Image: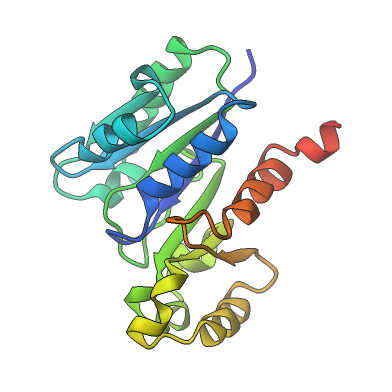
Length: 205
């Protein structure tokens, strides 16, 4: 039994973390065995949303209630998430990918390398074009950086070209992309990254 790849998904509240997991599993679970873990401070609301709206059966979703500080559960003390990963592996020995969605994060939130193999950090345009310029650790260190809700740019006065310039400056050669997950715009780039950089399916062919 090979070890499933763990992909952490972090970002501020409302940026689109749960929606990203829902869209990726909907488009990829037909070919790849997937599961998801959601972290919430006091509820398992994101897990319920994922089960209700997504394609994954409930036994492939675990909601972790982190209590006080959700950052600790993905960084300093990952025991609850590690236990959830082990439970999912026991339920589904064929698992290839487990998404670990963090609770509401600030820009400095990062995943412990002992918990996940790859990480995605997602923000939304409505948080302002200055966000990439603030160069938080989540944005800089993540393997893939996503700027979501591009449709809101004209409504909030955000210049996507400035966000693109700043993302290139602070991320160097690391990939980033723009999405509007409501319409799946840009989702293909995220799927390509998962297939190519995470699963290395291009090499397997």
